[in-house]
Length: 95
Image 1 (tube, helix red, strand yellow):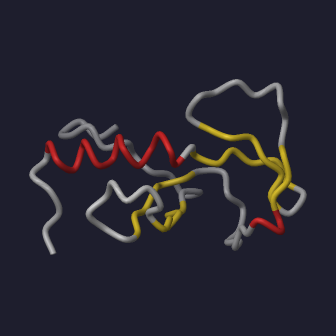
Image 2 (cartoon, rainbow, N blue to C red):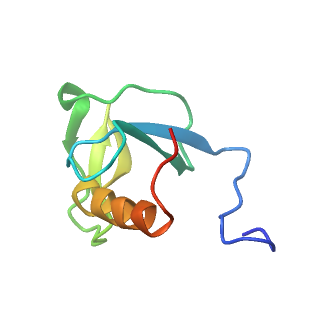
């Protein structure tokens, strides 16, 4: 984290994952999440996903195989309401 705020520091391997808002709780149609450990840009579709390691027990992520590679996808059903609350507490979104 940076000393002057609570924003996590990013590293050279960081990428911005752009997601379409699905829950209807956000005042925006898309939002971004900073990720780490993605070796290359990839489009992930239902056709390229398969269930991942069932031994991963983390309420924030869903383990999957994306195009044959292990990955952890954020649980959007939990992330979007949390993001909506944070945006509301911060005064909303400026156009």
